[in-house]
Image (cartoon, rainbow, N blue to C red; front, side, top):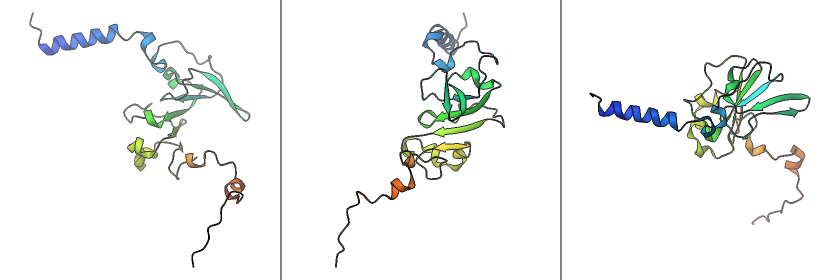
Length: 166
C-alpha cells in the first residue's frame, strides 16, 4: 500500500461528500428532478440566489403571468427570461454563464452597500440589466420603495416650521 497522506485524505473527503450529500440535504435549487420544456408555458424568472424560498409558482403582474422558481435546473429552459440575484448571497464565481443575449439579469439588494462591497464597483453593477438597491443609480432605488407619489413626498401636512434665528 503506497497511498500518500494526500491520497487517503482525498478519498476520505470524496466518500464523506458522497455519503452526506443525498438529495434531501441539498438546497432545493441543487436537487435533481425532471423538468421538460412542456412543464412551463409562461416566461420563467429564476432566482439564482434564492430569496423567496419558492420552489415554483405562477405570479401575475398586470396582464403578464410568469413562473417564478429557485430551481436551477430551469437555467437552460426555452421559456427562461430572467435571472434574479439576491445581493446578500451574490457571488461572482457562481453565475449562470455563458450568458445568453435574451436573458435579463436583475439584482435585489435591500441592505446597506457596506454589506456587499462588490456593489460599489461599476464593473459588477454593469452585469445587471435592472437593479433595486440603495444606490440612487438603481433602476428602482430601495429608498423610493414606499413612496406612493410625488404628491405624497411633497405633502406639507406634518412639516413643523423652524423659527429663523436673527
